[in-house]
Image 1 (cartoon, rainbow, N blue to C red):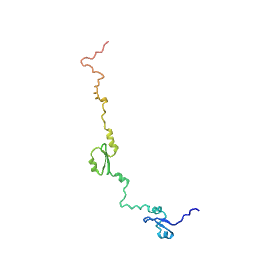
Image 2: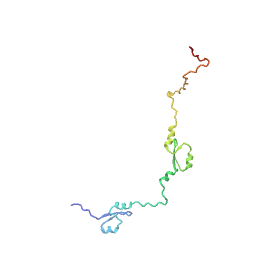
Image 3: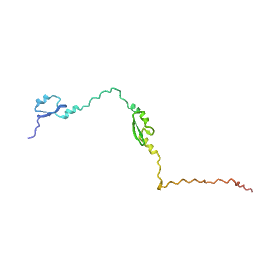
Length: 148
């Protein structure tokens, strides 16, 4: 003999009250329309997004945001990054601060570093350059041209 599901007893679910077990149709109808056959049905109705309240002020545009200078980040080659809330905080940082981390890193990369000496010997001083043509002697008169 196959199983035949029966409508009662059955559980009924409410959004704010504890679940109840009803024994017959009269008890089911007495609960009211806010009771559901499944907890998923009850909570699906309560998950509707709340309406968004109207803004009291005009929203700012992206262009207005881009025009703002502060707050801003400033970057240093060795001291890291700092958030400046206003121009006074930025001035307090002093020299060597940049508006982009790549600019701060370029300072470190552009600084020449001394090369270590080879074999721990100091480099020899450069030799002076010799003149390719010696200067003519001033006490010898030039040779006279030959006549025929």
